[in-house]
Image (cartoon, rainbow, N blue to C red; front, side, top):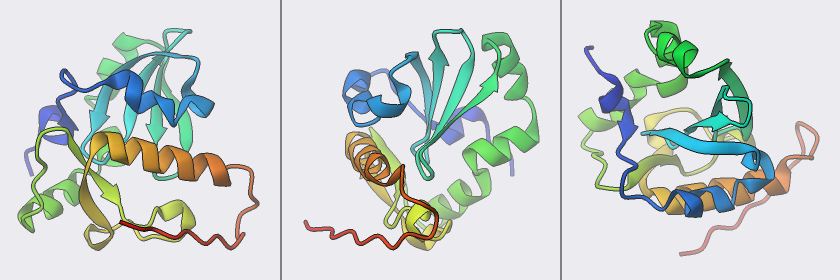
Length: 158
């Protein structure tokens, strides 16, 4: 597999990034810039401290991944980080199965893993990036303080 970073991220130049932040402000209010968005709908952001953070939208976690932009550039050269942050094998499987992203789309979990969904191609669908961040941010904000194992019921309607 010979994927590059551009194969694992979406173009954010024509996306309303302020709109994407709205449903996640409870967690990313101190972030100053969105640097990139993975095809799986995770964000990499710059903090007020100039450190780089990974917003994992499948778990609702914000993790510091580098102390500054130079460290982040180095971290992006590490295959283990690429595998962990971008899940290239999963992206490749989705694309091989015919699920190709259109402009401003990401792969979004149908049932988020944090509430029991599986990390597999069968549980992912192409979704507008704004819908993805609104849906995941609202769900994860509502369950963030619940103890592990709490039963949650989510009703989805079209």
